[in-house]
Length: 314
Ligand SMILES: Nc1ncnc2c1ncn2[C@@H]1O[C@H](COP(=O)(O)OP(=O)(O)O)[C@@H](O)[C@H]1O
Ligand SMILES: NC(=O)OP(=O)(O)O
Image 1 (tube, rainbow, N blue to C red):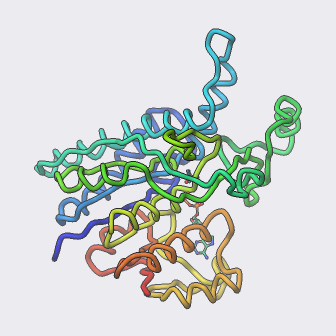
Image 2 (image 1 turned 90 degrees about the horizontal axis):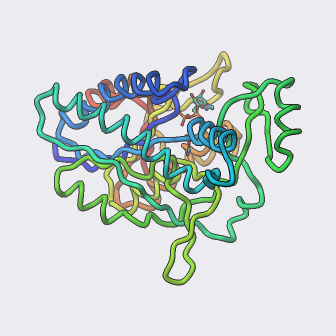
């Protein structure tokens, strides 16, 4: 099979389920790496991205709890960069272990990646991205009293969470570095946590307090590096219509036009499956012959063997 350039975006379950300790997240990423290494074994050029919603929210809480005049809390753009570093370290370490076990000669590196956004994006005045821990009804009262300046929402019946602005990416500053690394045979971990949100002010890129959706950032990167495939890995093997209903039906190969009809029918939950579907559509529309795939980590082997998963084409 010809060598393919593949951007793989890792969903929340690839890194963190319940236990937010470093040890548990490192173990989750070791398990994740066992699936990802299959792409490398097959000879594909891999570019990895990941989310950071739980981690960056937890980091902000730690920053706030320990902050003093001499040791101030860091702003959100810096916290995103910090999570690119921490999650990237765990992931490159775990992937390296699997590459070594497979007897392959391949290096992995984590890039601090800046993602450009529009300073006038309406998302800045309409926070929507959930970060950090879930709170119960009882807990949220105290949290709101302690931090009335933040916005909180109820997140899909799972509890309350803080939400922050999530502007759409317009560019990836370091995409040429990603290309250079791939051309050199190196696996880059890039646009982690959706990338550090920055806006251009003359010669400078200036950080903004926001968390970009990692599926949209991965899509923008996939476009810029002319990827053949954008693979969005999440907790389900396929996208479904009538999801979680008795007549649910999995989508196997689906066109952009069909997906658009399903969006119009409200088939995909906002804040979970909808952004993945929109990112997949954008990639297929904006690339030359590129396809997008939505499936689970556990199904990577079946995808590589039989093309199982939901494949989005023009
Ligand atoms: N129509 C749908 N088809 C499949 N999954 C759906 C659908 N609507 C909502 N979902 C849910 O969306 C989840 C993926 O979103 P989310 O958990 O936010 O992603 P991530 O893996 O990036 O953390 C799936 O695990 C599933 O529970
Ligand atoms: N940045 C981002 O999209 O993170 P999550 O996928 O963890 O929400």
